[in-house]
Amino acid sequence: MQQRAALLAWLPALLALVLVAFGVSLAVGSTSLSWHELWTVLTGGGDDLSRTVVMELRLPRALSAFAVGGLLALAGTLMQVLLRNPLADPYILGVSGGAAVGALGAFLLGLAGLWVNGGAFAGALLSTLLVFALAHGRGGWTPTRLLLTGIAVAAGWGAAISLLLVMGSDASLHSMIFWLMGDFSYQPGGRLALAMLALGLAVCWPFARQLNVLARGETLAEALGIAVRPLSLAIYTGASLFTAVAVTEAGAIGFVGLVVPHMFRMLAGGDHRRLLPGAVLLGGCLLMLADTLARTVAAPRQLPVGVVTAALGVPLFLYLLNRARGPL
Image (cartoon, rainbow, N blue to C red; front, side):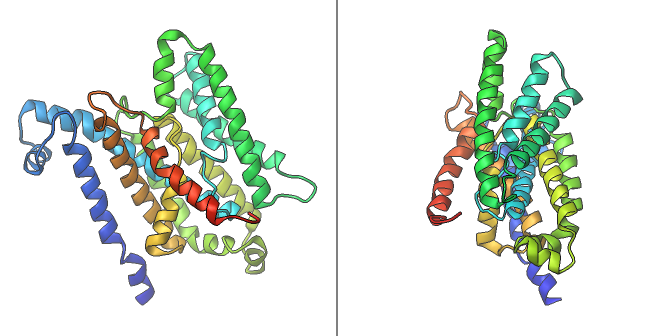
């Protein structure tokens, strides 16, 4: 009972933080609303302009940002277990780049809907397979080899994205570049991303104890009877799928998958029974606030949300690199 209470002690504070982030996302913008006005709108009152702004523009955008942030944080948490490296995340390992190339390829072919989602998932999965195929040298896979190979593959996807942008029409170039840097302007509410987030958390959380053991090394995990290969394959596939849905929803947003798991570990430790749901809530909260900053800090212009997440993530990435001096 004490252990369960310790696991749940952080939950009320984190849920309260998420509610505050939702409130800020809905209230702040070109038409600012007080908390009383916002509550009036959410309970069915208020004038037509306020209802339109909140219910048709800001609420779908906030839900989409929460879902994408949660998916990226979940994918980053899984990859850091898989590679046992604190610098691993879908953006740095090239999974986001592969998903972006798949989605952009579908756009250029004039496809939409599920074809774009399928293209993003195929790109993410191809990128994951490429990394693991290329990293398998004479000595087999090692976390360091996988990380460096992922960085190289990510650079290759960057070149492919540039090529696809050059091949696109002038009319679509601006919107494609903006989408690649993170854009929630045209989201219908993130239904697919929210459904995937709920499904992903429901599937991953029962394996939290196995993830705790795997994070200590494959040898120990095998000695304790964990089927390491099937579990690793499930992590590859799940992280790729979560990243693909996130990229399809809002473009290739970097650093959320890297920053959020570390932030939560500093707050509540590394037990994955806490870390998985905690990272999801914190990732959703962070991206909602980042999107609010992106659409207000340079108003009336809107910044790509990836600019804000990079401003937060780059200092922490350099801090982690500094701590990891010596053999990675």
